[in-house]
Amino acid sequence: MTHLFTPLKLRATTLKNRIGVSPMCMYSCREGFATDWHLVHLGSRAVGGAGLVMAEATAVEPRGRISPGDLGIWSDDHIDPLSRITRFIEEHGSVPSIQLAHAGRKASMPVSWDADSHEDWPTVGPSAIAYSDQYQVPTELSVGEIHGIIQNFADATRRSVEAGFRVIELHAAHGYLAHSFLSPISNQRNDDYGGSFHNRSRFTLETARAMRLAMPDDLALAVRLSCSDWIEGGWTIEESVELSKELKILGVDLIDCSSGGGVAKAKVLVGPGYQVPFADAIRKNAHVATAAVGLITNAHQAEEILERGQADLIFMAREFLRDPYWPLHAAIELGETPMPPIQYGRGFM
Image 1 (cartoon, helix red, strand yellow):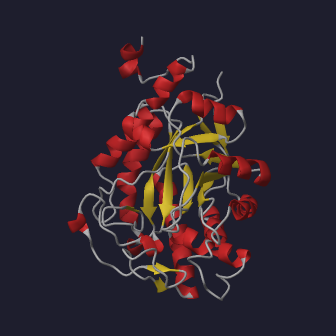
Image 2 (cartoon, one colour):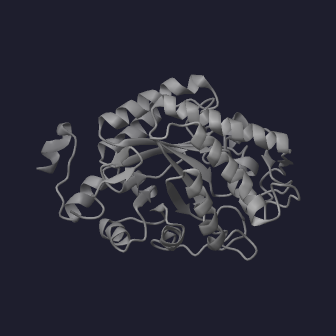
Image 3 (cartoon, helix red, strand yellow):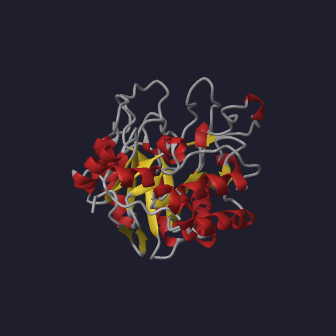
């Protein structure tokens, strides 16, 4: 059997293969509620054979949305529409997952294709430093407000479990709130949440701990990191390794290794598999399972990453937008037997 189609166990949950649908914002909600679009979008990737299907960045409070179209889970009322989706994903042999997020200083933006969708609300961050001229200057969070947001993540975790998600991910990447605490460029506090590596890591560690305590022991917890800010004086891969060691101690089972997004002027060296070295470094030095992301587009490329031991799981986003049935096609390409739903079987005979 190929590495890509070998099952992966995360606590009590077993993924049937090493292929994950990365969270992708759809900007298609009103007041945070999942719609039929989300059912079809996520459900079709489960039908297409992915081992894990992760819902998009889901805000733990209204001001934590990137845009008015973001998915939300700040209310118990959000649970039922999400439960419909998780049931469908599981019925088709995939593991439902969700990414919990707070956009921080990058919140309150219009939907990317609709400038008129902007709803202006105040943004917050570790320091009163705007991401760029196109963004608000955020209000610096008080310690009490930080604790309140951590509690929001814990409450959102409980709701995610109730909705049927089996893997829950903390979004600590791409310049959003947790990442902005980690990076010394966006975090210039002089209290317990700023300054040293340990202090800048405190928000992410305390949030991960609160989420772990809010979920059953048999469910898996993941954290997405921007492993490098790609700029001198920013967050580094070496710090990501050290943070991953501490996250593992807290009960984090998987580090989802992305990069960038925290500094507008950073020059990211983009190319096929350009973020795989981050997953490799954390896997080998922090001794925790990792997911590789970033311009991974074909089956042999994905197989080689796993074969080399650079990651435990392959996450893809844009390739799944182009081809919801990528896992079925990858199985054929690698000489495996594709396992489509019985309704689609005659298309693979």
